[in-house]
Image (cartoon, rainbow, N blue to C red; front, side, top):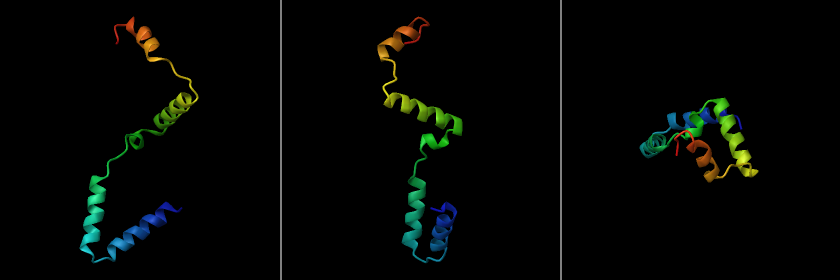
Length: 77
């Protein structure tokens, strides 16, 4: 999909429309849409998150109790 072409098609449809309902629907959709926290991360941060998820999917995790023990010695709980 050519993202730029799609955006231009959508803009053209909106610009050529006299349908107030369509304009209000688009406006409501855009104002209600929440930005995903992942999209606000930098490229390197996104890579790190995806790597961590892949590790978890492979079962490469540390049990919570073990983490609490490890960090408990620094007063973190």
